[in-house]
Image (cartoon, rainbow, N blue to C red):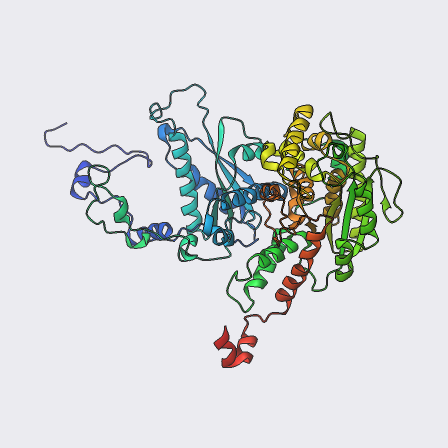
Length: 619
């Protein structure tokens, strides 16, 4: 080659850097996008929002693939690519996840003190409304390989996974797709729900869909929960705590069944075969209508949530005139002989008979509400009471301090009896209120709750019908004895019910299945009813879509159960009466909420034009 002749640069593959050193030196910023492209990037960053309200319209599959490809393009330490994406569209799975999130939402509510009510008014997830969810997981198993960059900082796999989430989120914003990050769950619960191995961590549950809101500010800032702080407060110079000179912020930065994973026996699965999750699209439709009412958005608080839950269960809002059925299930308990109540066991049959004749509180309420009242003998002792529906499985349950309460056959018969009773009532009624009667059943409910959750006797035992301090301590000791005698496995809810439950608890579980099978909402009464619902929901997460908590009773552990169920009560009157009375008292709230939804004026052009200046001045 002659002197002075220049070498030609090799032709490089397009994925390699073909820039020259002189080019990079003369124009260090030459790698930047053009003005329009940069503006788009900054806009995506600045307008990314955590979306809570979604349209039900499905995402086109090519669009979903683009979003996943964006996530998969994220940087990762050592090119480990630890992210894994589980795409979830099954309504059963989403129903189970929403139940987990609802429970944890109420758990956290207890930590906000005076801000609890404000916290409960926040909409924190859209699991059921979004057409799909993506559980982004981190697979920490490097199969014994040494990963570049991870030796001293093992958590770089989690950091890399978070970068994939951010990539997906920004791409979604550019595509007009909403993303909501749900962080209300226990990781082990999600592992069980999705069958994740131990080395896989669920990092984020993302709700994905077209948004039904277009917020200009972060949601928590918009609701007054918090404020976005200045960048200058977070930038230090040289060492911790020494604030740097103010930094100019960029302008743009301003249907497979999935319950709890518990295997249920074949006969239970046959009873539950017709249960489907509620319809989130119906809830969205009702919410759309509610947003058009002449009122500030969300101003009816829990009543709006109630209407949406009803629509999810039934397909539409509740009727303004409601025909309700009240089902009260009565049984006796062997542990009653150990003095855990102020009343002897024979009182159960007396109260049940009086209730059926309309002589107790629930009889009065049923007449006042024009509701159909059914009181059934599932397991009372003594002679049959003529006023009761006779579905007696056995003469009471065994003493749980010495062994199992029920045989396997009694458990099944009790559940099947409750199913049949609720199914019959559902043919004539639009909603079912569930309650129970049984001396000593708060002790049984406490033992069953402890078995299901691992809570200690001190946390689950209350005063029941009015025990004094000594009586309460005796009750706690008996619950501890029952747990020791039966060693229940909390991962097997039906076995917990068999060992430390009772016949009316079994029938309550069956009644929940029967009501949900007929797509009838169920209003829960007190502590015992809620504990039975917890058993059923542990096996069939979709059941929760049909549940309404009528009230929170004076029994302290009732709050624990409602938290586990992720339900907020409509009333809190410190009742400890039982027999479905608290649930019945909540029924008028449902019909009043229905009338508000049905009869309030809506914001539309005709209404605005006809209302004139007077209307405009009052809204």
